[in-house]
Image (cartoon, rainbow, N blue to C red; front, side, top):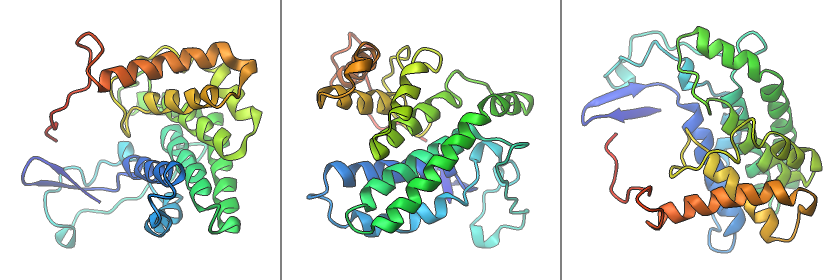
Length: 251
């Protein structure tokens, strides 16, 4: 994938987090607007298969300074894998969310493929959750900023999608039990992007209440809903100045 930084520079690297996020958003649209988006499954067909082979852009150094076309690239095309010794809970969590969402989108058309995607989503979520502390330490020791949501929002995002895909209480309890620790009910945001999924988590969990479910967790879900309302108000310029910009942002 080539990413533009300014009018001429091209960064030649696989940006797996934005790609997985894009797959999740495509699937979300296909799920909620399945009558309006009839070709979404065909458009997404290649994405889930590629999702398991992607690498985190936060870990790739070698191609970041390259500004030539991919066909002229002479620097090493280094690939990285995630494992217990080289964890990446953010990427694993984001990909788990993407596969869980895709499993719902494909369910009406190909149930066996949907089940396969969901199985992999569960595996990735378990890996991401089991290695989250190692991942944070790894990023810090590698010189990357250990921002508050470097892995937390991806884990909540993945759990929220896995609950929607499976209906299992385990995943709903996960977002409730970790609501404060992982910032789900504490972060009021005006941005929703591949690098910050809190607003998406809050909207997904608000829908549970709106559908009359999750009564046993109503107190915490209402806190998520309050933050979702805050984000919605920022989008319509009703947040006392703390609002989402309506102007395109330069890369």
